[in-house]
Amino acid sequence: LPIYKPAGVDSAGQLRLLVAERHMANDRSGLVLLKKHLAQLVCLTPLEPAASGLVVWSQHAGIQRKLVEDGSLVEHEAIAEVQGEVSSQALKRLNESSVVDGRAMQAAKVSVNHTGPETTRLRLAYKGYHPGQTVQLCDQAGLALTALKRIRIGRLPLAALPEGQWRFLLGYERF
Image (cartoon, rainbow, N blue to C red; front, side, top):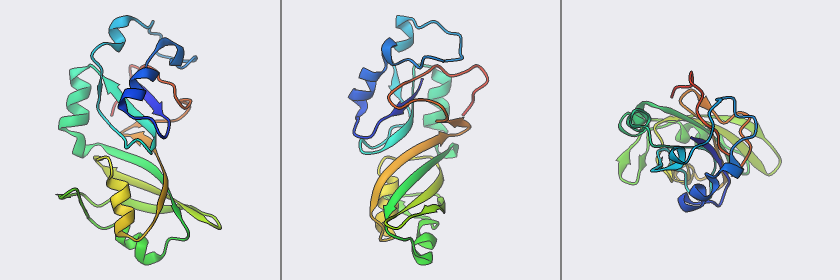
């Protein structure tokens, strides 16, 4: 179940959003919500509580295997907002391989999406994702992260999913 996690909501709060009232009104899956759909769900793509965006919950073993066991092969895309301008040196640092929580990470692909007078939006794409990874990347580049929003996991986009709502995966959607 893809859910659009609002900023400031932890895992327990996300579970409280997985109710019939928060089911996206124009879900195109054609599935009728049953109790079994919401039983034994596992958060497969956690985000830090301060971040917002796409999170996947599932009870399906195949999806769990793809997003957890093969998780380092699945690309995640996010928009990060940082204070001020981003220098070419900071951008170069963001695109280098880094160590996050003592673990060597593959290099992220980072580009400037938008520059404003007080903030810069960065587009980040990384293979696999670990909560806290973007915060540590920005810290290492000397940037102050103010907001983070994950917009894609594999081939699954956040797209038209309203904040705080969830939907069923469509039959053709893959990670």
